[in-house]
Image (tube, rainbow, N blue to C red; front, side):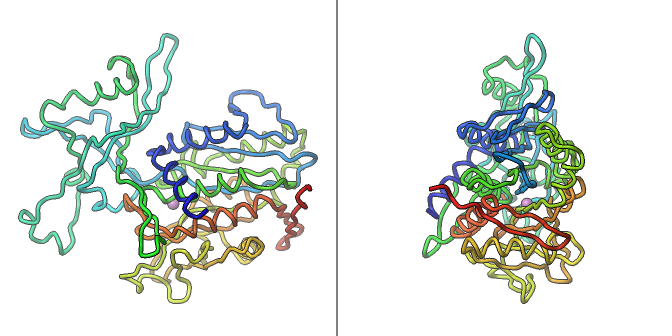
Length: 442
Ligand code: CO
């Protein structure tokens, strides 16, 4: 089972080099499972028992399942579709001394630069194509090694092993070919779209790492792959969502773009996407404004984004009593200043669910002298205020182009989130909750 999940995760990641592709992978899976697509611009006619999904910007997706009968509340797992990478600039091709063609790029998010050097990379993204009656978008993924960012030889920088400052405009531009490659990009993109170059009117193109995923270690206990942050949580939440038992909640599987750049876009976790959708779901099911507020007040959200495992070479970087390890369970993240949404109440709810699913739990806090990152949880709850817990899986080398996690943990997360989706978690009063599970029908 553990390995099956890992293999499924790998195949999802390999077909999800950008957030557009990740959302397309999710939508395809939802279609296979019989979910019905909604458009934000259409009128919605939802019914009890219905299963739906909608996207925004092709890079964020909300899938939800409505129970039969009256619904109690919303139960949401939120994760993110984007990962740090490099975006191609509009005029990307740049000649160097008549011998090389480089591509001009800029950073998307905060990555570990060195992990992008000396490895096969390629290009993927969204291309806008002119049509008779307007414009349509097409996703492309070059399925071959296409570019590479070469390191500077040690002989040309003797201080390279003492730490190197890298300038993204100088040191991190990918090599695309010799001087003949100057006009090739548009041609290749057009071929990939099966159109003429002049029909391409816009694009959002990114680099992606071509390194194959791997399961390794003395006992095959580790897995490594690009984009584990946060496609590992995306995969686990979708898997749990689709395999859960009926409950009295409207279950929502939310995947947002742009977490790596602050979430403040029309499709990010700080946007109105979730709020708008929950409002309309309630409305379409015949609920009043009061019904909506009552439902939100008794709802629960799990914000799922990976966590830092203790580094084997640098144990001093993690807190001495709140550090976490690979393969030792789902991580609950705590922060006194509420960079994580977890509090005593939400941690207790999540921990109880894990107990019921026999899933081990670990607790994470940053060292008090290391600020650490934040997640999409607290941004999302500004729009839709509900009890929320920040969780994730322990991983190494976060924001490397090739990250490492534990094989066992993936199954733990699927089981914990399935327990959440299969239960009705109702906040019965401020600070108290009831966790119920329907008996499976014989
Ligand atoms: Co993340």
